[in-house]
Length: 148
Image (cartoon, rainbow, N blue to C red; front, side, top):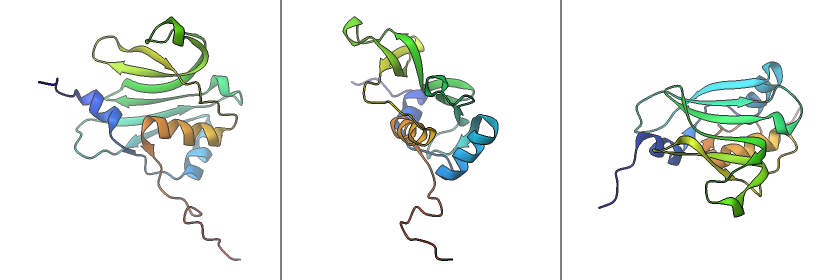
């Protein structure tokens, strides 16, 4: 019989609706260096927040996290030395995801070899895709141009 899914595993798996457009998120991060916004999930009780830090223009200083009841359960950031939970053959320098597990909580890290954002825009879109965070559609999301 398979083990029951924990609330943390469920939150990691489910789509988290942020309620902000990409432009809104970029504006908030650009003005204060960070974003801290509540996300909405179906069928989950508890407070889920999405946090993005990007105070400096260097991508290596950026990070994003998913918090459940103020405890980090998922996240992406950059480190000079990453010891991958899958073994030394997977160790890397750079971007990695914190892999929450019931044992060890978020101490497990997994290198993200294809993740290499150079712009904040790319960091938000790619990172949110990995963490299952969904932005609301912005003014130009439909693909239709607004005429003056």
